[in-house]
Length: 119
Image 1 (cartoon, rainbow, N blue to C red):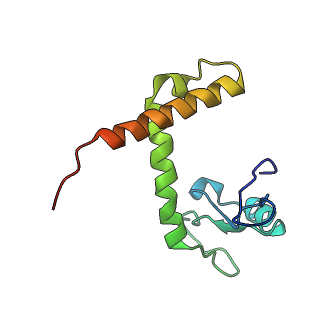
Image 2: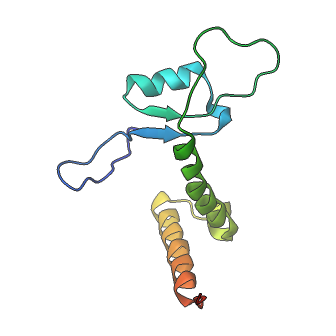
């Protein structure tokens, strides 16, 4: 999280996101507390618990922001279809990043060459 830098329209880049989305596997008190101490709003749905309810206020999250996470999941799923990216043949991080860039360019070119359906 400390290496993330998001460009802003003006001023210096932000080092922390406004919110962070994760699946139910990240539903832990310590993770939520870590995010809150850094001013990051967690968008993590609570785990489905069997049996007694936990005491205290129930955990809430932004359902709309959680659904937007699907775009990132699909992009990562598509990148895993590229064999050289999924198996990480490259040892150096710089070379691997280059392969990711080539895969994204290939996908973009594929979108550009697809015939558009007219309504």
